[in-house]
Image 1 (cartoon, rainbow, N blue to C red):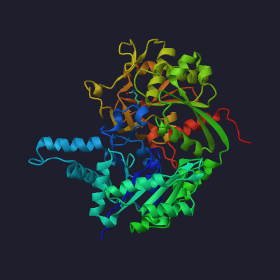
Image 2 (cartoon, protein in one colour):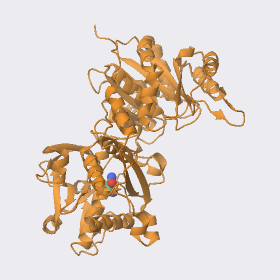
Image 3 (cartoon, rainbow, N blue to C red):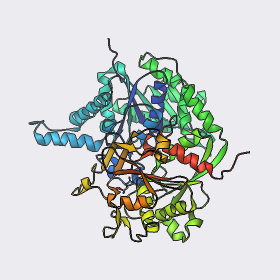
Image 4 (cartoon, rainbow, N blue to C red):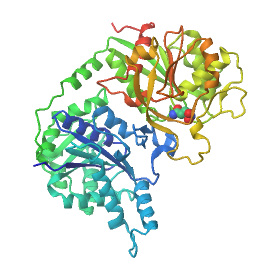
Length: 542
Ligand code: GLN
């Protein structure tokens, strides 16, 4: 008999930014380490249909899935911690739920009825839970993260829906509540009251957590756990602390495992599990904790002040650095300030390599162009991601080809030399949401190139999120002066990778390789970029 699918609902209390996504991803990681096949789903309570139209300062990075979903950055954690299938079905917002229900109402599907939050919105939420389990046939456990904090008005329909879902499948669901247990310096003690209140708020909705995970600075005493247990109606052994990790977010699964979280989840859900195997994960951490040298990489972008705007780029760099046994220091440079500073050398000097990540709009271009020129002329490794490749091409056009006014038409629609211009398929598209060139496309790699050296194969698949591309009219001119187009759209003409001949490592991609790097499998281009940066002088730890 086929076992029924099990569901784990992860809610958050007290404050936001507790790392609910990381926690959900860590639970997924631990269940996979016990041989279980999991899937993940993130509910976001905001009304945007997806985060694609939000400013990175508001929301952080937009994580793109193979099928072109523009999703929450927590899906990036899911990708890096687990092998969960990820698609548009893995991230659902209130905007999507309401859009579906309202469209149905207009069609007349609810004819005669008053359309309401309960049951129509909650039914749609429940349908989306089931849909997330259909991404892959063999899914045994679905982990559902509810965005927001318990007590928010916005997340109420999601909480009501998971209450109903559990009522309908009592033996197949558990609720894990992530909360915050602060240490009050003045009182010299940790406080459980915020946790009590947030669990109380959950109980009012009809949800009683099975496990409480307590974010805290230091491990909690048994006394504190007993108090939380008593007030929150949860057995003491199910009050688990999730204290701040010392060095790396990838320690979280190990810490939770040490306290028996995965075993407890398996038992509560009556899952048939194997002994856990975290050997590879632990070996990766050991390597990360014992670097042999230090390397400094500069990131030049315009969203550097938001810590999550380039989340996957940072992580991909860390994966590659750990693989190479180097300790990575990342220095962020706000591209506008490079121009204000007057001297690019002074503004950004001192790094072993530079990354220019993706971006949109006019602001920040000049600083990025100066960075590309600095790296090209000083032969410093440069890695351009999407916009970073477009910058590299414009800089080359201006300073090597002598096309002094060359630009991308995204910035200057009247440029005499539009070396980067709008994709033909984008002409006539005016709606902003979900209309870019999105998701995975196959790319053919040219022989004897840095790209071939990195990937070691001819056809690759990478994810995209852009409207502009290299203008092929200029291809021969670029090639005649040493630009190599080392990746092109499979059976197509679009230029996907470019690299500069006779430079140690200056490469740009129209796609976003950072989205497909994992701690156990660093992305090959990031791996080679870090290797190239290491080849320069790097300080050795004594
Ligand atoms: N703004 C550029 C484009 O749309 C680059 C996009 C990006 O970096 N993701 O083509």
